Image 1 (cartoon, helix red, strand yellow):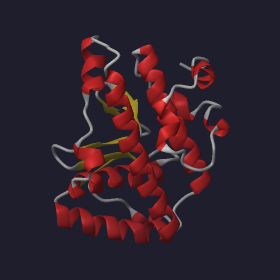
Image 2 (image 1 turned 180 degrees about the horizontal axis):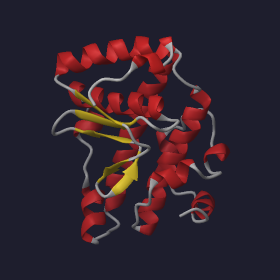
Image 3 (image 1 turned 90 degrees about the vertical axis):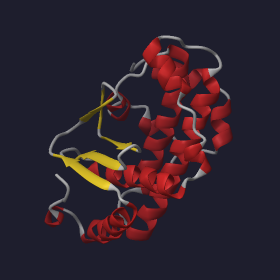
Length: 200
């Protein structure tokens, strides 16, 4: 499904969608909306993903976070279009290592690059939310911070679990209500990781 039934959404979201759709058409992007709660990306369930090879933004629209997911994936599309260094210089070593079961300490650099990539994306999403009044910015920032820490947990365990477990846990409510500085994630807080171990 390439178009949403905008009657199901707020006027604020419609205003953002108009901008996003114009930007998508100008830069050759594709919207792919799925009438489901989740989609499958690289064998894992998630609520959405961006595919740079096809410039496709895939979003499951039958879940409570579909607005946030759409904005997030659109921001990845913008990173790609702009050839932002945080996007173009991000190495995917850790993904290959997960798939091939060849996990090494050197993958830490790749993890930090992905956290930087996602953090930039979340800051863009929050800017759009503030401009268009799209969602609760404090809750969004909490979800984002929990996701950044999740990357650290993946590094320690060599295992990517469904992020749906993360969003359904109590971990999110314990997170700061503003996006944490990137330097926060340069060192692993083992107390936080122990909390994650209760859910994964």
